[in-house]
Amino acid sequence: MSWAPLNIAKALSGARPVLDLVLPGLPVGTVGNLVAPGATGKTQFLLQLAVSRCLGLPALGGLFPAAEPEHVLFLAAEEQQVVMHQRLHDVTDSLVGEGLFPTQTRAEVVKALSERFSLFPLTGHDVCLLSDGNYTEVLTRISKLAQGHRLVIADPLRRFHDGDENDSNAMTRLVQGFERIAMATQGAVLLAHHTNKAATLGGQGEIQQAARGSSALTDGVRWQANLTGMQAKTATELGLGADEARFLVRFDISKSNYGPPMPPAWLRRLPGGVLTKTALPEERNPAKRKCSAREVRYD
Image (cartoon, rainbow, N blue to C red; front, side, top):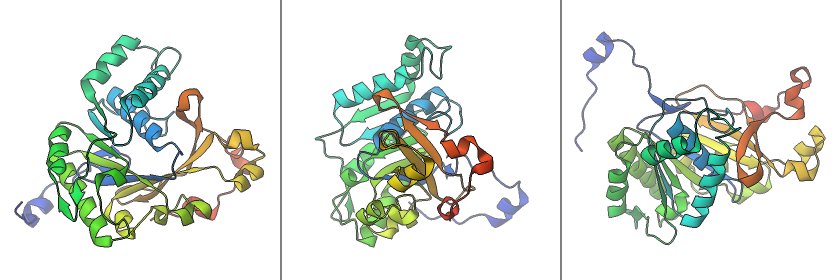
């Protein structure tokens, strides 16, 4: 790929361009990262996001606003078909009937998803696009599959390379590979990655540095969001019991190069594992709510 300089005269003689955002703060041609401990709900979160984007609906109970329906490619690298089949049923059931999309029949929703959603359960398949520091034919295969898709989801990141996660060169090259896909398709790529043990045990899963491995990964992506379970201390402060707290997950955007910071939000896990935005006791009475230091820790 040849280098092309920016035509300064042309750029400054025209209007200031507006970024085409796939998600708030995540433009086309860029790579983002969703970081969370295992079993927190990364795959469920991403599946709901994908379905909502394909249908043009607000995602996750209003966490993200509605947008024009778009095509989404989801590479579920550690999931079997039967598991994704079950989850897709649960997500669809949460949208139709008495759900968020009551004006549409299930048949209409199925038709829309069949046309716009490309879901690949790939457990047991070789999806390694970076091996021994070199790109493989998997990068080309994904680039072809991604054509025409506005959002590409790769879950989890660990399955797509065989490098040392603590090697900054390997992580930089990995991000560059996904950037190639984003640029080639003029969509955005969203990765799913795990939190490091120190952040998980220390109750700091919401910060940028919570991502496992080299900081080159967080430095390289243009957008990062974090999912964390509710800490026991937080539950106690809110007067919530352990049985209720275990169904609550916190969402933070810890890095957003191209957009303003968003306040943290809480998601509640419903039957079937479906996640939806919810208000906690302190948020139901804003006059009593105090902003903590962690809530404003953004770049």
